[in-house]
Image (cartoon, rainbow, N blue to C red; front, side, top):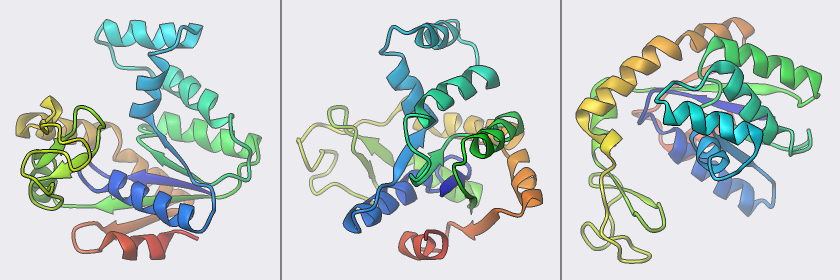
Length: 216
């Protein structure tokens, strides 16, 4: 089973993914989490031909094309067997990528696909993201409103001083939401027409309840 998470920045995709991974682990079941951001960060540390293409694109300040993104995803995806359960976060981002993914699922017999759209008002999204704080050492994520550290502004695990990422500022968040609306929201119609989209109110529905509704 493949679970695709859609939702604007701050909708709770990462939080739900982490909760799902813990639940699967407790049941001794595998759940592979694939994030586009993680994939690009990981591949940039390699010296393969594909990695060099990605690094050159990013260094030139260009957007990574659908074709290049698809190739990066496919290289990772095919490392697993088709009995695995997956969460895809940040992929696909465009209809072109979504079509490639559907073809890949069918070609390699990776089973069924379920798409979850986490719906959330922009005001709430901005509050959530601007409240994020990151540990620069272990990368754990906190929030000044909903997930405070035990000691103010310090990581619970290594006592490092927490930081706010540049792209978590209000101006950056608004820009990211606009980009999402332009490039990614067409996926909602695409998956709705396929009959595999489930829309959930991510403001009022607790993560454990979302998990029970969606995951098998």
